[in-house]
Length: 301
Image (cartoon, rainbow, N blue to C red):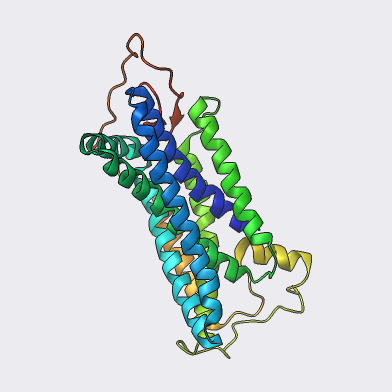
């Protein structure tokens, strides 16, 4: 459940920050008339993400066992790829996210309401689709057969919404660079488990061989139905009897990804825009949420 909570928190917070940036900028520039198209785009993005998740869940039930395993394994691998890309992308661009979104929003304001809807839809929709796909893959990997994984995701998203609101109101400050580093590292561990489970699905679908080649079997020591077995399964997608291929793929992904993720970043040549005092009569806006070098949500920028 913790792994699913982390997914909901991490992805939900990214979407919340995007919403905060868009709304804060429109309020600051006294373009409240543009808020309705932006909220419409956000609503459409949420609806598409939910529909995508429903298609994944209910559409796969009509397939044969091998087809389900092939689909599940393939989408698990794709989900891990998308989440890995997202983790590195956010680590690299978080400090410039605000400026990038402001530029897109300025262009959309010049083009009209339709462009505003599209800007918000694309900005939030990407996070929503990634979340739906990875959550679906992670819930399959957990294999709990209960509503606990879904509850964990919903609690994570609810926490992210509350944090986003506190960011916007200026009641909370957090170093986002550090936050995304820690959560990104934990998410890589979760993704490694999802990838290993995806490999197992592909083996059961007979797309990959080696299903009978077990690396080890500690089912007697760590029973899957024990509290600690359930805990390890929920947090790390631990399997007591993985195949050799699963272990190799899990280890390679975790070591290589963690090496590059924790490697020092090269200094960026891009400079943060200067911050000046707010002009008289400027609307009240949220206080600073730092990303290490540049504020993510700051009404004075």
